[in-house]
Length: 331
Ligand code: UT7
Image (tube, rainbow, N blue to C red):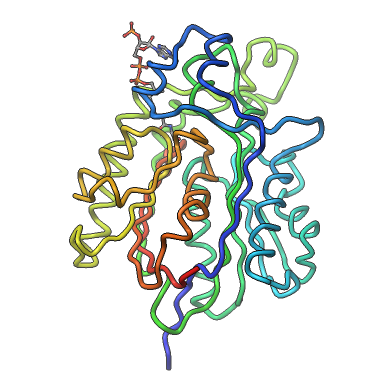
């Protein structure tokens, strides 16, 4: 029997129009363009403006872009997963609303939350359904409206994050293309270093929590940085070793865009040259669940059938991992 693998057959993207520059941030907090650029690689990020617009707005737009480009009939989609840390609502899945709005009326849908690793974990979920033969077309959308949980008086977080969405369609492949291997990890030690303290079941929202700004995301940047550098590099290296790959076999490193220095450290550890490292952090910042699919959409034209891609991500929780995927089409 022919082995079924799960391949990405189409991608789409959406970023909001509003550009938040380092210069504008200088008017909010004690910071400067030079510091932000040298410490993070970020020059600007996109922000979703407009009352009543949440993460679903961007997820729908990214999906519509994918549907239009690939001529996909949304009725053929079996499952929609929205990977996000900023759902529209605490209860009532964002993915369900997105599926209905894009016309995926034969699909079921749910959200997947693993902070900045959400999309990587969702790739695993989508691929497992497809490899098992249970479903044929799974749409995975990574989308986050980070501006909804940012305190724009906190320079430790406001300079980093941006809004955006990317989408990828996973389908069965019989040529051996698509997901080859993955190594996914998590460690609850990370809970204290990157979190939103209030609004969940431990500390429900109250006037007090809002007054204290506990509904905003906070991070101990230095600690998260150290864990991110060592763990992302280690799992990426493992992907190469376990699959008998050398850096010459790798066409692209698709790493979570949290900090240019973290991405460069990962690339160095696996020996991949900088021109093989996908990078868009300078224009979007850290869009959490959206960074990986946004990279795929931005680099789609340069990707060739059979290219070997190493994915790597690290996020709050902690959550992290790497995956090895063979690209399945020329665009
Ligand atoms: O997405 C997944 C998870 N997130 C991450 O992976 C993010 C990981 N962390 C980072 O990317 C970095 O830690 C940051 C970009 C957040 C911070 O960079 P850093 O090199 O770790 O800076 P730092 O926090 O050690 O601060 C260095 C100095 C400090 O001054 P002193 O104590 O040396 O005088 C800070 O007070 O820079 C100061 N500083 C700033 N200066 C200007 C901190 N934030 C800023 C700022 N502008 N925005």
